[in-house]
Image 1: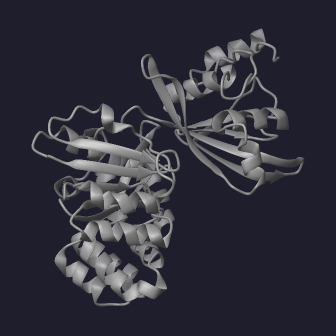
Image 2: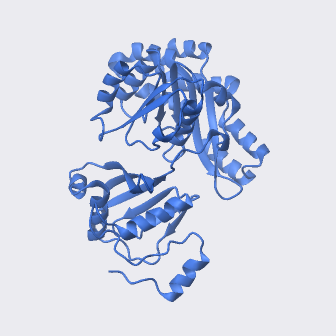
Length: 391
């Protein structure tokens, strides 16, 4: 068992408002049942609003807050035994065996109980090779009870005017941790709380981040399914979705061609469909969409996709003047003229057509930076750094 931190270390912790007070216990005592230090550390990170917690074999534990990594000074680097216990606690008895078989782990972890209140975390575990041997890299992202409301996310009026579509496809893209799920989650909450909405929303994700059934809705409903806990695969979810007569379908993320095709089919079948994609800009989002269209179905898939598109948003989080994060967004409302241009050209031309449309009909990152500067949300130094990133 670990010793309680020394008096000198306790004084250092007391001077740092973000430091974790180490309870001096094992990270995990009994997998799947008792993890005193792990739960304490995760609860601390969740309360602070940390972006992620990191455990890596042979490295110190740490958490990331406002873009700054904070390592745990009171503990030795994680050894193979403790790393294995953490993985098996988060996933199950065969967690390490799963990693050794070449598969990663993507699950939700929960502290507490529904009656007394819970803290939820999104967990990803990947096997790694280090100088001292094989190990595991565990990234745990705290999930808010509910997403931040749209009113606190600096959402542009044009987006607010178009996200409540009754059919067609909305894509929200960005890097991991850029707030894609938070934005879609907040939009979904607004639909649920609207007394005139009358929406029947179904969602499939791996995993589900925000549990929105707790949102009181006078006229709408939501049903969320998690892969593989509730449904074996995305494909099986989509096969049953059409029989459930939803008004809205939310797809956690499009990663493979079959995901993209199913999402397009949902959108052209009369449903308001939303999904996320990893991409750095709106034009690169369309490049990524085109790359996910199967070559054997390319012409028909391109036409269907062009018909379905209604709104494409790309988001990134940048340092704000208060030392936290603030969103910048590039977006395009996809009008009939833009959709016709997409349908009538090659997929290789989609990024250029989209870049041209952004300048005349949408909001580019250049414009988003200028707005954030005018609003006083970011500094000139941050603005210049983002300009350099986007070229």
